[in-house]
Length: 198
Image (tube, rainbow, N blue to C red):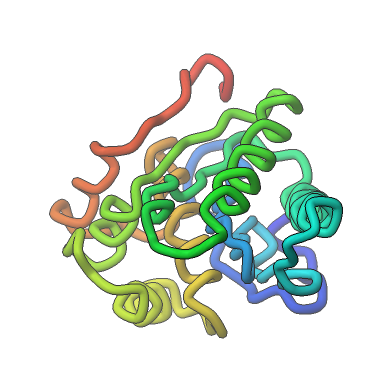
């Protein structure tokens, strides 16, 4: 989808990057078992979970496959995907293995398609959005709406938008200029080799 095409149903329209003869296609993914946020050139969306967590392994596997397939369909072919790093796996609860499995399933599928992946720690995402690495998701949502003028129904989509914006900024095509203190969040990320992108 180009910046001039109409976004698909359920997508929130985002501004296109300025400058350069080639517009990089960057996606942001906030991977989650309850609703994965996705931001692409066409806008933002959220892939809701299919069904509830179950103790049955076949049901859990189906759930993870469903989410992965939907995410890959939404992302399509891009030059770079920025995913939020998996630090929240220390949270209590029985879904630790499922969360880790989903993250690796999606990242592995992207790498299998030769799509470079950047891993963005949540503190770097928060710093880029708000200037404060410890900012809560609600603050990131508010900052994303104000800075990018996007109507974002969930913090999942706000996180994905910030991740996409970070990738574009790293590639030299910032969606919007951000203060230097915010941009410092780019330094703590695991970026892929540029040779695979250009």
